[in-house]
Length: 320
Ligand SMILES: Nc1nc2c(ncn2[C@@H]2O[C@H](COP(=O)(O)OP(=O)(O)OP(=O)(O)O)[C@@H](O)[C@H]2O)c(=O)[nH]1
Image (tube, rainbow, N blue to C red):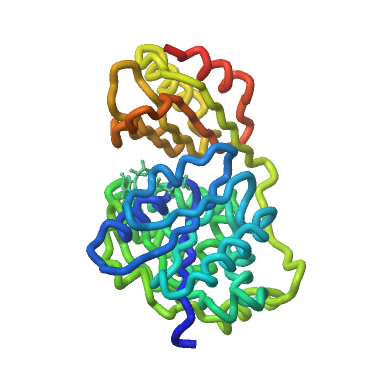
């Protein structure tokens, strides 16, 4: 048991702050070596490029949600990591914001090779203090993620009043009275509160969902959720791109749960990276393009009722 590799499953709804937390963990002086598995909903990988840290190996799984189609992928990557045991102190799996954590956690108990070599240390859920209450009403995944958490990072406390914060924590407590809740801004939390918690308690999970250990476990999915990703084989003109993205998120904000992108501007040595949650956009230049690297641009939108054609044409029209 003790020499099994601890695995932390990092979950939380779209845009809650999972990558922010991951980057915090990886940049802290911990002297440990982590393998990171990132899964995102969308065709073009962006999250892996946003994860900092030179020493970590990042394994990416695309085209599907970790809890459904790519679970085989997860097992394959974990098997590969197990064979290199001793090289990693721990494994961190960052799931897409739409993943139901139950089947992910299930993998560590159902697959013999995986369960022989790894132990699920904890399910850590990042919750968005501003949007969680709304998502609990319309997104079953958000509820499951809270229900399955061992540790809950109630993040973005800067965006709500103390009263709203107490309310949202009350909702969390109503769903999951067991998890340790930490209130944070930008996921600022000591690493020891997140990793190596030995917090995953199978008995408790079975109590919540008695069918947890049965194959063919039923899980909830939001059928209306879709993703649109667009790749532009070159640079974009900031004079066209900035008004386009800001207008799109203002108009379509309620439907766009999440957007992100990495784009190249002419004469700019760094990549412009932006992210948004509904109509809140955040972007900055970061990370220089490598010498000889082709300057390309890509954007991903996740949401409901997205007009794929308009988004695709709109972005491509921003070409420099
Ligand atoms: N105001 C505020 N913004 C935050 C805070 N934490 C993170 N953000 C911002 O919220 C956005 C989403 O953060 P991410 O860490 O990318 O969220 P995520 O959960 O990894 O997103 P997905 O991978 O798309 O599901 C980014 O623009 C962050 O800078 C916070 O405490 N307060």
